[in-house]
Length: 375
Image (cartoon, rainbow, N blue to C red; front, side):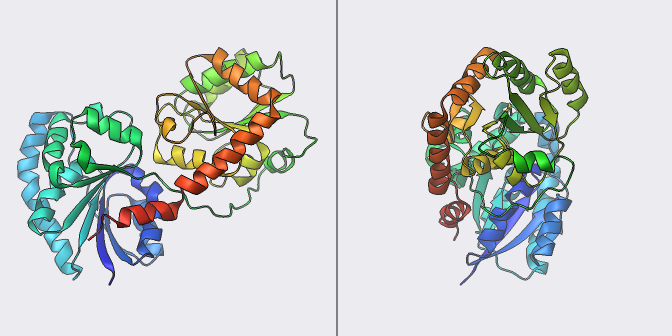
């Protein structure tokens, strides 16, 4: 018998979990969605899965305002949920919630309806920035809730906020390994020809959103320092963002603009992975898409350099990658040079990186683990 699961999602990051939702639906589960994300709703409809649009839950940094609206909105939202359940003519065994405000709004009514409630806690920049009243109410409700953290780093954040440790289970984010589509643009030849045994350049690659300049700027300084040892070095930056013009000005000022390529945003990265000798993660905070990109790079047998203290310790260790202080361009440069000089180290890290993903970060493993929490 299929398990009926209602997903309620007003969190902007959940669209990046669509492959997980799709896989869960095909594993003896029947999923329905209430969401504020038009893209996610569209994806569900394309798969002929039931989905409906809802408004974002009220969220404010003011605890006083939230308390007022919580009292005013909780009853209408409860009836709204009951109405949705009624018109869909489906008995839901489980409700999965993602955003903190929706956890506070929908958990009480779901418990009254005797529906199994599961929280999935998505990696956040800093949980301390959440509304204090929302966190207090969440801690109160969480005593009888299965709270799934998508990384041990996220679990540690919750424990520091005094959420019940025994109710927090870590389920590693999984990726679906699929064939990547080809890119067709003026940079295609770069991606096609770089992974040749006789290629002239040692290629450092990164895939990121160009909205914050700090870590990329540190990488640029590191690249300049590396030139003494690696004269034929190039950096390929895949991504778009508001800081692109500023970053181009920085590389021009550093006089490395002839070896740094900005190739724009790409949805399919396989050729770029094949063109890189090493992959550098420059994200200052890990979001779902960042983690998925790193895992795909690892599975593509790329040595990874990532930043310390952002949660990569869940994925990388000394056997499958390199963790570096991204406030220190000298340290980043030393790590790049070390990987350049020691091909055997690169090959060892790459092999172990792929094995790590195969063992711990496949999508079917994530699906099976979360299914254990469903009634």
